[in-house]
Length: 325
Image 1: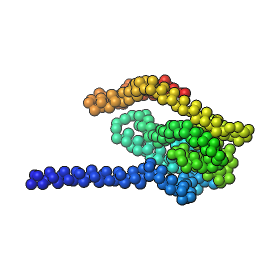
Image 2: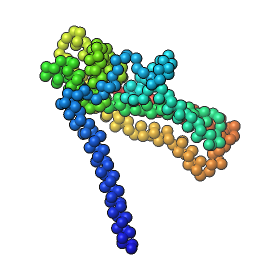
Image 3: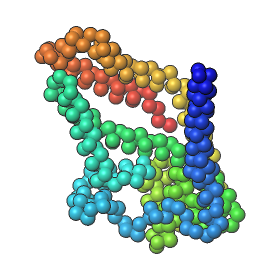
Image 4: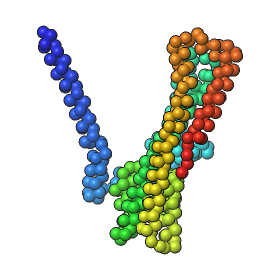
């Protein structure tokens, strides 16, 4: 009986592992990067419109909400415009209204969670403010990662455009080829610029709009070189080749600097999380001792002063370890 039971357990475990592996292989085969590349190739060979064209709108004013009244209301505030620009730069598909609703939900959740602890009102207000800022911080992190990926793709894009121009393609065809061949997210941005030109937007405005969606200095150099060549002439392929070499050299220097500053960044991370880890350990071991920080008036002043100094230290450490190149 025991042997049958153990055999059943072994076969059940093997079946679960095989099922998980089969689901993973199905997902990679149908939604993975290789599958997307094959689908894009087949789409180009069949002459179908490229994916991502549905993101283009003939309207110059983006919609901030699905509701017309809320959309008109949000367009009155400059903050909504900044949020929309951040959403575009991060590549997010949410609208401004959805982002604001998500921020309000996080603030409400943080406030309700802080009410479960006997914390003073300033700490509860700080927790609610942190919940409100959490979606904003996550969106900025998403934007930063996307910009880093685009920055790594820029040298290959510059070389690709230069080779296409040397092969005799026009600039419009070059945009279409680059948008089709390059991987996301830079390929999608070139497709957007191409679709805007097809809708009748001048080339200069389409390139300026792409530079606004991707606030990178290297991309601005590329756009400026294209615009100057279109007005004054010159060998654009050679210029773009030189720009690609400069971008590669700068990225190599950035990687070298990051390696040299890795110890400082790790020390800054440890110093940032150390007070909160110590506070959590003290709460777990001796909560009555730590509770004086928010039950006693003197402790509340000490807690407020300590949080302010921690914020100042975090900002100062970020300025030290952040080296611009």
